[in-house]
Amino acid sequence: MTDWTDPDTFAQALEQAETREKGNYFENFEEGDLIEHDPGLTLTRWGNEQWMGQTLNHDPAYWRTDAAEARDFDEPPIHPDYLTAATLGITVEDLSEKGGYFLGRTDVRFPEAPVYAGTELHVESEVVDTATSSSRPEYGIVSWRTRGKDPETGDVLCSYERTNMIPRREPVATDGGATAEEDDEPTLPETFVTPEGGYFEDFVDALERADAENAAVAYRHERGRTQDDVTVASLPLATLNTAKQHHNVDEMADSPSGSIVTYGDVTRSTALGHARSDEQTWREVGFDDESFHTFVAVGDTVYAFTRVLQAADDASSDEAGTVRFQHIAFNQDDEPVYSGTRTAEIQKRSN
Ligand SMILES: C/C(=C\C(=O)O)C(=O)SCCNC(=O)CCNC(=O)[C@H](O)C(C)(C)COP(=O)(O)OP(=O)(O)OC[C@H]1O[C@@H](n2cnc3c(N)ncnc32)[C@H](O)[C@@H]1OP(=O)(O)O
Image 1 (cartoon, rainbow, N blue to C red):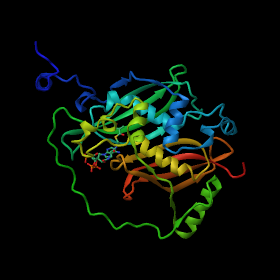
Image 2: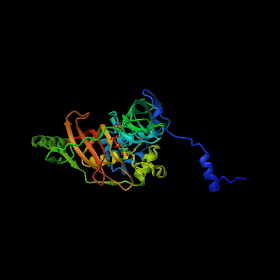
Image 3: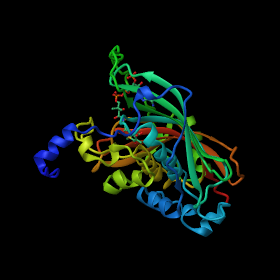
C-alpha cells in the first residue's frame, strides 16, 4: 500500500495537488462592489491592553477608571488605534490576503462617543477605485471605503478609505511608470521650535513663536520600539489580520522584503504612542494622507517625528482645543516608514 507520508511520495503528491486558494486577485474587484466581511471580533479589554501596551500607548484614561472618568468616559474605552487596526484586520481575508502592499489610508474618522469593551465589531467595505499600477505590471491598485459598525446600534465606530497594491491573476502591459524627476533641494525652515509642554496652549504658543521667526514647530520623540515576534506576528493575528506578510516567513522569503514585516497599523500606532507620550491627548478626531513608505521588519526600531501644523479653539469640549499634526515614523537608519496627518483634541492647561 502506498505510504503517502513517505517524503518522495509526499513531494509528488504536493506537485499533483491543487491548492485551495485564499484571498482575491485584482481582477475580482469592481468599483461599487459591497463586501460584508465574515470575520468579526469582540473588542475586549485584554485585546485593547495588549495592543496599547506593546505599542507604548500609555494614556491613563485607557487604563485607569479614575483617569477615564476625568475625561467623561464611563470606564477605560477601546483605544482608537486598536479599533482602527481591528477594523482593518477583519477585512484582510477578503481584500488583501492574496498579497500586495498596504500603501495608504485617508479619512479615518471616529464618532465623538467612546467605544467600550464588549462591543462586537462588524465590518463592510465598498470598492471605490481600481487602477493599473504603471510601474508594476503584476499588480493593480485598489481602494476601498471601510466601515466598522456596532451591529446592536448600527453606529459606525470607525471608517476610512484604504489603498493597497493587489496581485493580478494575469500581469498586464504597462508604461513602466514615470521616470523619477530630480528632487529639488530641500527647503526646510532654519529654525525648529519645540513646544514647552504637551497642553493645547503649548502648541498654540509654539505655533505663534514659529510664525514670528519664520520657523516650523517640529521635533522628535525620544522613545523607540524595536520590532519583535509579538509586534510583527502576534498583534496583527489578534485582529484576525490574515496577511501572510506578518506571519509566514516561508512565503515571504521570496518577496521584496525577504521576510515578514510589521503590520502598518502597528508601525503607526507605535509612532503615535511616542508622540502622545509628549502631549495631553483628550480625544482622537481622525487621520488623513497616511502612507507607508517602506517595510519595517523584526529587528527594526520605530521612532517618531512630529510637526505641528495648526491649532484651533474649536474642540468638542471646552476642556480641549483641536491640533493638527503631521507624524512621521522612521527607522534606525532615519528612513521614513510612515507618515500621516492627525487631528486630535488636546487638553487645555487650565483644567
Ligand atoms: C495590512 C497590511 C497588508 C494588507 O493590507 O494585507 C500591511 O500592513 S503590509 C505592511 C505595511 N505596508 C508596507 O510595508 C508597504 C511599505 N511600502 C513600500 O515598501 C513601497 O511603497 C512599495 C514596495 C509598496 C512600493 O514601492 P515603489 O514602487 O517604489 O512605490 P511607489 O512608486 O511610490 O508606488 C507604487 C505605486 O503605488 C501608488 N501609490 C503609492 N502610495 C499610494 C497611496 N497612498 N495611494 C494610492 N496610490 C499609491 C503609486 O502612485 C505608484 O503607482 P504607479 O505604479 O502607477 O506608479
